[in-house]
Length: 135
Ligand SMILES: [Zn+2]
Image 1 (spheres, rainbow, N blue to C red):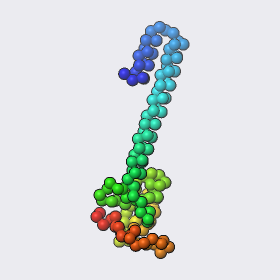
Image 2: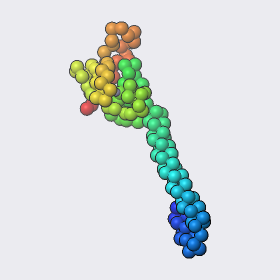
Image 3: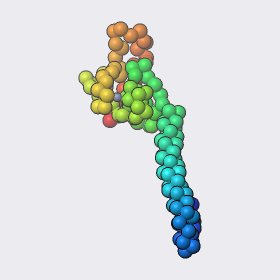
Image 4: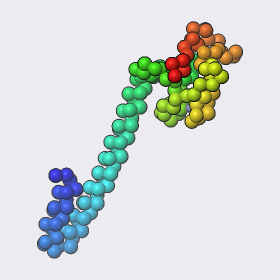
């Protein structure tokens, strides 16, 4: 039996005594118990969400051109790093320009996959991976 059910049982017993003060007090306790239960449900949901974010964070592989992959994903689907960093959302990016670039349908960011942008000083080996080749 849960807390709310126990309070309802006590309220039914108290009602038989006809004491208004006692009756009002048990109604107040019941109301407070419901509020606490709502807070608990919200905290449990928030905790589940934070655990999911932590679990995903532990799997993230970052790439120099600002897309993400997950280390346990054999397909290595590419996700938007902007959306993850700002909102902790895994948004799969779409290939553009013969898989040289990606586009995020959520934040509209366009980034490079295998091509070194002229103003970046990275080595070519960082750009040899094509996350769209198996799609
Ligand atoms: Zn995005």
